[in-house]
Length: 294
Image 1 (cartoon, one colour):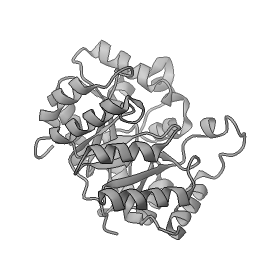
Image 2 (cartoon, helix red, strand yellow):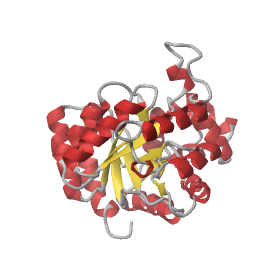
Image 3 (cartoon, one colour):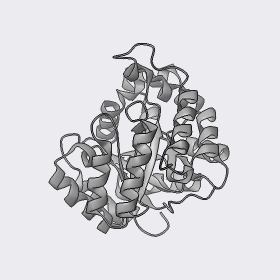
């Protein structure tokens, strides 16, 4: 399968671009594209995700706009396919739909027992996209895949995978599972500080939510982390494995590790800035991250 999206380079993964002030979202998106970031990724934890994607498409002219990750429990396959068709007709083929099964603790909170057989649910959702009135082509979607079975489904039924909360070691395993032709688009958390204590404190605060989600901890166990690494907010080894910190050049080196391990594109998420747009950090990182060869 040849992916429609020729996505490479480095992108930005940002909750602020989804839930921030609409005016600043538009300004920031245009600036990020001008700085050389090739894709803008937004999460989906409620609300009008397609409206958020449309806002970013309107503010840019060439960047890929991607969901990282669309929660399939919140949007029917027909709704997703129709939104992709409408936005592609209006803005060209720049909308990459990242799709995920979310987490049992979140989906079962209001409807206990709903989260069952996530792999089968994902396969059924992909069937729905294929059979929609305006089908969403496999090459225009990627899956939030961590484990072997979901990576296999991503390889066979989509354009590739968007792993979140991972290390370069996982990227190498994912590339092996996906084969050579599928897209591999990992997210990388970063802290722009050379102070190890500060960087790890930022990392522990940001990762505390994820450490309670088995989808992530099970994947980290497959990578060799264990109970000692998850205790106390996360060992230094765990935090350093998941969060790239230091100078822009040090962060660029981690991005290159993912690229060397088989990633086609890496999207960075700047941590420690939940209450504001990290525009200063995005600007400071751009020369190191958007240079040819990173």
